[in-house]
Every structure is written in C-alpha cells, then in structure tokens.
Amino acid sequence: MSKIQAIRGMNDILPDESPSWQYLERVISDVVHSYGYKEIRFPILEQTQLFKRSIGEVTDIVEKEMYSFTDRNGDDLSLRPEGTACCVRAAEQHGLLYNQQQRLWYRGPMFRHERPQKGRYRQFHQVGVESFGMTGPDIDAEIILVSVALWRALGLTNHVRLEINNIGTADDRRAYGQALTSFLKSHEEQLDEDSRRRLQSNPLRVLDSKVPETQALLADAPKLSEFVSAETVSHYQLLKSLLSANQVSFTENQRLVRGLDYYNNLVFEWITDALGAQGTVCAGGRYDSLVAQLGGRGTPAVGLAFGMERLVLLMQETGNIPESISNVLDLYVVYSDDSQLGQAIMLSEKLRQQVQGLRVQCHVGGGKFSSQLKKAYASGAAFAVIVDPGSLRWRALTDESAAEAIALDELIQRSRALLV
Ligand code: ATP
Ligand code: MG
Image (tube, rainbow, N blue to C red; front, side, top):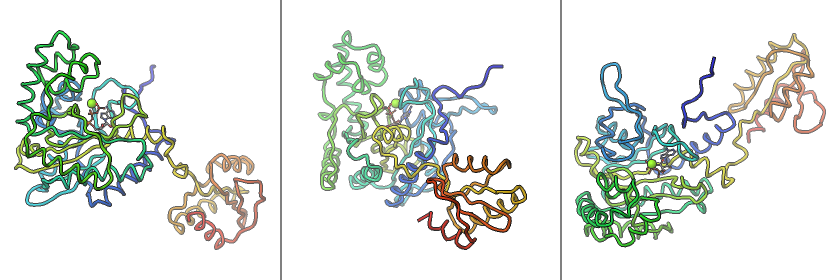
C-alpha cells in the first residue's frame, strides 16, 4: 500500500528543529510583552466572507490562494490566510475595541495555496501585533519599534532593512488608480500578462511587478506621492521624525503597496537579502477603515506580522541560533541490577519534583548495565546516575572520569547546580 505523505507545502517541524522555534517564540513573546501587548487567540477557520470583505475580493490571496470549502451545514468557510481580519473580528465581537485603546498580539498557522518554495509554504506561521483606538504616528512608531526590539533580541539588526511608504487614503488611491490605469493603458502592449490582468482588477498591484520591462515602464508612470492628501503626508512626516529620533533607519519605497486592500497611510516591510526572493520577513501598516468595513464602528488601527519560517531560516542563515537551546538532557538514570528498576524510577521522579526544570531520563527496557550506559552516552545527557542496591553513583558522560559514590542530598545539590 502506498504511504500517506504530508500535503505539499505543509511542513512537519521535527524535534531537531523545534528548539529553534521555541527559542524564537519565547523571544517574541518576551518582546511584545515588554511593550504591554496582550495575547489573543482565535480559530483557524472563519467565514469566507470575513476575508473577502477585509483582504479584498480582487487580491491574489482571496482570488487564488484561500483554502475554502462548504461545510456540512452549507456554510462557506476558509482556513485563515492571515490574522489581522480574524483579530478584528474577534476583538469587535467581544467588545474590545470601543472607548478604549487596545494592544494585542497573536501567533499561529496561516494557510495559502501558493507555489511552495524556500520561504513560501501553504501552511506557514505568523506572529501578529495589532493596536486599536490610536490615530497618531506615535503608535505607528511604537509598532515599528517592537520589530526593532525583536531584531536586537535575535541579533538580526544588521541583516534586515526597513522600507516604508505613504499610500494615502482609499480616495487618494482611487484617484491615483485612475491616473495609473490611463497611463498603463496607453502602454498596454509593453506590459507583461500578469500586469495586464491586474490593470483591470487592481491597478496598484502592477507597481509590485517583478518583470524588468514593466518596472522600466513604471519609471515614467504617475507617482502615488503626487496623489496622497496633505493630512496623510503630515502624519507620515511625523512618523519619519519619530523613527529618526529613535535611530531607526529606513528607506522610502514609493512602489511599496502591499497585497492586501485594507491598508491606508503607512505601509512598511522589513526585508533581508539573505533569503533570496522570499526576503520580506515582516510586513504591516495602518488600517483605519477595516473595523468599519467589517460592520463595526470606525476604529483606527495599525499592526504588523512576522513570517516565522522566514525568521527561522534567517537565523539559521546568519548563525544566530544559540547552541544552548537544543533539547539537552541533564541526567540519565541507569541501574546496575534489575532489582533496582523501581528505585531508579522513584529516584527520577524525586529529582524532577525536587529540582524544578531538571531534565531527567530514566532508562527503560532493562538490558545489561553496559548497554544501559551506552544509551546514557547516546542520550546527550551531561551526567549519569547509577542506582546500585542501597547506594548511588554519579558519572560524568562528557569525559573519562570514573563513577563516584554520592549521597542523595549531594545528588540533589549537584542537580540544582546544573541549572544555574
Ligand atoms: P510575500 O511578499 O512573501 O508574498 P505577503 O505580502 O503576501 O508576502 P503578508 O500577507 O503581509 O505577506 O504576510 C506577512 C508575512 O508573512 C510576510 O512578510 C512573510 O514573512 C510571511 N508570509 C506570507 N506568505 C507566506 C508564505 N506563503 N509562506 C511563508 N511565509 C509567508
Ligand atoms: Mg504573498
């Protein structure tokens, strides 16, 4: 019979890799908590309508990438392709948004039917940071500073760069879209096929094209910056001065538009050159209309999302995964005589209870003493504890020193010392 394999583009995270993930998750939660953000958790499955109304009907994500199906009740559901829409849905539904300021974060798997390649998967993980109820550029700066703090904590500061843009209001973009469309229409024969399609459905996405001929053509196209309203410009100027005051370097990229429709004013991306084409490790922006668009009352908002797989890859690529985070054992407990099996289990239990955080593995499956010791060496533990009838021995596994007799009190003390 043929074996069943994982779905293409959906990864298993194996025990060798999980310490890197745990490390990253720990650092991220420490950083976001240090800014007072609170975790929110919401389901993986939502009404398909939620994403159509937020991300936009004519975006790649909604048109081509969602895992959507009709369930047994006939409801149209989708696996979440991103977290912001879900976060807004949950926060609105539970009354977290009005007459208050809210700082939230979330993490978990997202699903998009994209072509799998390095850094691009069909199930991937994001950590998102979102703030609600604050209109000023100060909260935009704070959101960006959260990411700056994360790069510092992970040792990645010199491997990422920030690009920002002001995309104006929805009205600004509509006016610009018309100007861009008429320019591009007059050069339609020079456009690649993808851009021609986008020209009809979502002209601003043409700015994102990777095709060199299209990029060359865009050099002469009208600029979004000529269409953005004065109010968004002064917001953007203030944000830039706050970033500079905090020594955050950035470049302005007038072509940065993002693939989700809900953004306004500020959009930004953190990019690395270490991962090839999948170089965006974090992206975000302001989305002041989304809550209302989903049926709630107007609530200003700004947020970002990190792509976890790309962060893990970047840490591997740049050698920034600390060695101490692997799955190491502290002690491996063996017994010199079969009669001591029960003692060995009891001793292991006692050690785990008395020394919080100690990692103890008790030998199972019996066998000769010498083969138990082989297992102890192979386990990666630093020390073995040998249970003899009526006494204990302590043995280093990292050098050749001989086993020595040890009393239980001393054993507990030495175990504690292993953790500091
Ligand atoms: P990309 O530019 O890679 O297409 P995006 O603009 O679609 O990304 P967002 O929807 O803003 O990305 O998601 C935020 C972050 O999540 C991205 O910057 C990236 O790090 C990560 N991400 C997005 N899609 C994927 C994917 N298919 N696989 C892995 N990570 C992803
Ligand atoms: Mg994408």
